Length: 107
Image (cartoon, rainbow, N blue to C red; front, side, top):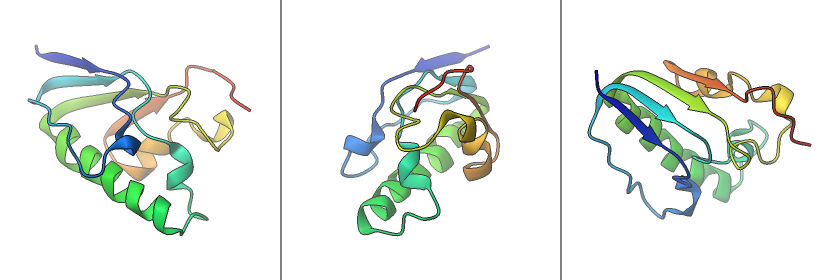
């Protein structure tokens, strides 16, 4: 079984998708991959749209290389929204990605 662990990718700092993963059985994203605030439906500004495209490229292309993807939200992943609304948000955004905030509260 191949398990890859990545953290602190901070895709929001990329101008274009630059993270390339090898693929395998399981990918564990251990926090600080993206900023959830950019994914809120209310955000229709150019900045949020730009980041949404970067996140979609990563989750739809790179995570698709794995049979299982687990995403543990870090402090930056939850920026701009209450943690009670973050559990499962990536599963809605990108089917097949399981997320949790481990009960952490960020206000």
